[in-house]
Length: 400
Image 1 (cartoon, rainbow, N blue to C red):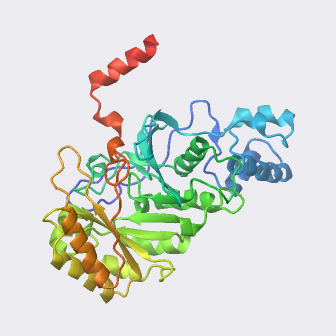
Image 2 (spheres, one colour):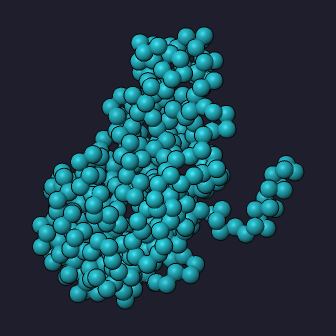
């Protein structure tokens, strides 16, 4: 059973606080999953399992190489570790992967994985291939608490934070699926990571920081911080820490330029307003013209897409002298959505005004819409199924 050991997380806006369990119940077999642990944590775990300090240091280095350079999931494959020690490692540890419920592929090549955790929680990740890069969109929470009204994921109840291991596990599973072992810096299909999946990364700061530290480690997956982008809806108090302790690129879900509209579509704005958010962006460590802050802006018909909105966006970004790029995102409809997408002509006119103001404002091409993998659409397919459908699938699986 999950237990709540800390006070409820403060939640913005009108919604009630949702208690978020900080840890998972131990595995039923008592073993520790090594994926997501830092090098010192692996070494400490080995010492707890009975290895002496000198041996634990050596074995930790070997395990790290096999897990993150070779993609090994079985200790018997680790040929430079004595065979006599394999049973000891298998008794105490496991090198896990998230369990996959579904893995649909879009007609445009986008892949989505519906994953499930040992405690039965579902979450999703998406891989978007392009000619010059391959981007993995990673989740940080099961569900979301921000209730952004244009976002399908935001209609989900927040269940809990993902652990560092579950976050790193998404990257490991993608590498498995793409056949990218042994790890090498050249010729990768998975070149970029965006923390833009389910959840608000800065409400799960420690796990996200630790997971990205593992992903960026030069002796392991070795993905450059310049290839990683963390997106936030504007958790202002955590933004400076993210810059100092993680140091990856920053994306901000802005979506509106007036208090009235942003209060409606991004309720977090009621706690941290636009001006406060933009000042935090101006103070973000490492932001410069070579590493611009990306502002995400979903295009909603007759809500935030006027010429005046575009001009105000330019004024705000100039006021704070932000090294900025604006991603204009055509709204991806979902059943029951209260908005419509702006017309192509309106989006183009908005983009032109921002460009004329000296700020890059490309229109993001929608990807994976036919499998519910487009921006704002992540919401587990399992949640949408009725109880009868789930019972029927279980019966069919048992019969098979």
